[in-house]
Image (tube, rainbow, N blue to C red):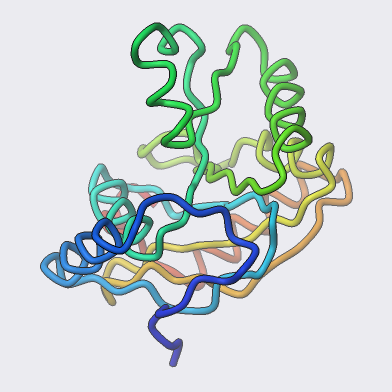
Amino acid sequence: MNPVVTQAPENMPRLGNRFSRWVGRVLLRLFGWKLVGALPNEKKIMVALAPHTSNWDFVVAMPAIMGIGVKISYLMKKEAFFWPMAGIWRWLGGIPTDRSSPEVVVSQVADWYQSHEKCWVAITPEGTRAKVDKWKTGFLRIAHRAEIPVVVIAFDGPGKQIVIDGKVFYSQGNYEQEAEELRLYINQKYTGIDPQRQ
């Protein structure tokens, strides 16, 4: 049985304060969810967040993020970074990206890792809440180029848990194979909030 997360590792990028952490923990309890497992003590990681099957994924993930005080970066189209919102998005972890091509995004996010001492980026490999038979490989391409580990964090819908799985690996550049192996691993081990979309 995985322990409930109560401590944040030293190297984790941080956001918020004691009050915001308290609010996050209270909201998570009100929703009936728990964050379990052990957070990696790494300055830079790529979080593969799956299975992504529902809008509720975001609703329960945000209190968990607030509750431990971690700064999780995420991809946003660069057009959203206009004054006065640009500073707020960056503070919250938003990474402005040019979505004109997948390769451009990979390069931009890899550069983002290089320019930050501490950076955790979370990506849902499905790229959608709909049922898919194949995962996108952008998260692996970014991790490989930035030379950072991929950490699996999973939604366990029936158990109402966000599970820090413990599976940590470095991409070797076999993106399609690695994505498929990870997809099968997640689908065999976890059931999302809306199983019909998994």
